[in-house]
Image 1 (cartoon, rainbow, N blue to C red):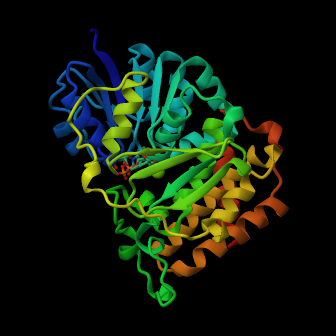
Image 2: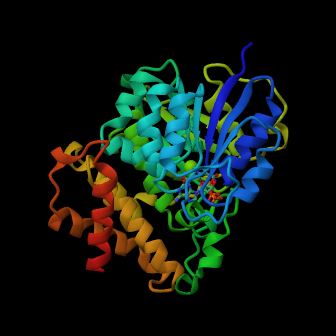
Length: 386
Ligand code: NDP
Ligand code: MG
């Protein structure tokens, strides 16, 4: 069988390294032809050594002095992909830099596998997502969304009553304790995730539960799910990744070890599954319970804000941008000790409502070419106001 070629954006991060581990294992199936980092080119050179012919790239212009053969900047990466299109574009970078790579390169590739939530939400608001879904296979890597994709295979949307996204609860919500001292949470504590090993932004988002709000928006756009069809369960063991409840009252759950390589593998191999013991399967005979915490996550202001963003189709075209912007700003303030952890959720809800009421945006002006600029202006507006 011909190997599938892959361009990997964000190779030096947590998802990027796990993708490399997987591609190295399935060497007969895949070949890396391009790998990028933001600025960490020394690590990238080492990671890329099994693929000496692959092009290497930095998205940052101020990445020190990478060797001459490195491509520099997003435009150079876009050009390289357009000139030598890979079968699969695998987006594992953080931030929004990959949005223009996605926008300008999707039509050259037959499959996009994407971990980056923020980029997916921008694609949703700008109308790019349906264009991509029409043109190529779009596979989410985020574990809940990979699980939803799997649960919905061969099912009719009419038969679906609800999708539950599971949340581990991060370091603080997994076992709600009335005596917990919310006042003294430090960024170091918030960065320590109990079940997943992830990059800093998503670890902090998991601690505040903004990650679940972002995932709610992601699920809305990826699977056209309205807020009444989306709910959240707290499941600290991170073994059940999503549950589909059907109209006949039965439910299906997708259950797997908390290992991102399984999600990456599914995104690369679907509709096939690789028969392998590369990742460990669950030992069902040792598993006594699959506990859920009876906690109404919808009551948290940070989750409430996410629901408000998609409460009607008009708002869903632009308010999710404010959710991402406010989250980025508030995390920066928390890290610099300008806001206490316990105040983050209410700050998000107040900010969202203020944007909804007072920010003027002509939604007709939003499209894949303008959305990055619109997002930046909105970030500045929120920063100035608070
Ligand atoms: P990391 O912080 O571990 O890695 C980020 C990667 O993106 C690195 O390769 C980094 O390069 C690159 N990068 C950093 N800043 C920029 C920038 N401004 N522009 C372009 N590239 C940049 O992140 P994760 O791997 O944890 O997450 C990546 C994405 O996947 C995020 O959007 C996250 O929400 C999503 N995701 C992650 C999961 C996980 O388990 N980690 C699970 C589900 C989704 P360099 O090393 O040079 O800085
Ligand atoms: Mg997730």
